[in-house]
Figure 1 (cartoon, rainbow, N blue to C red):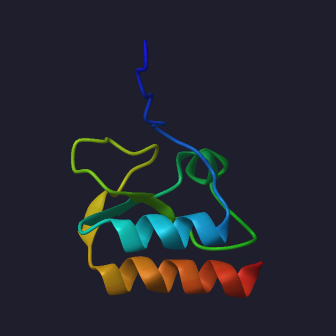
Figure 2: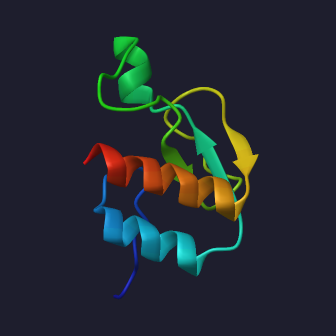
Length: 82
């Protein structure tokens, strides 16, 4: 049986993140639950968990809808921190 499982939460490369942004039309972002539980991240901002469906709850707080430009800006910031 060929059932495809869609991951709820995973880390991907910057290239894959760009592909996902390009392939989708709607975007949400939330705080990273891992970073939020530690109360900090020395590498970048907290709101980096991108989602492409309104129904996914996100791993952290503060989920909000964003534009494609916002999603691309998060990716560009991550590229600068890499």
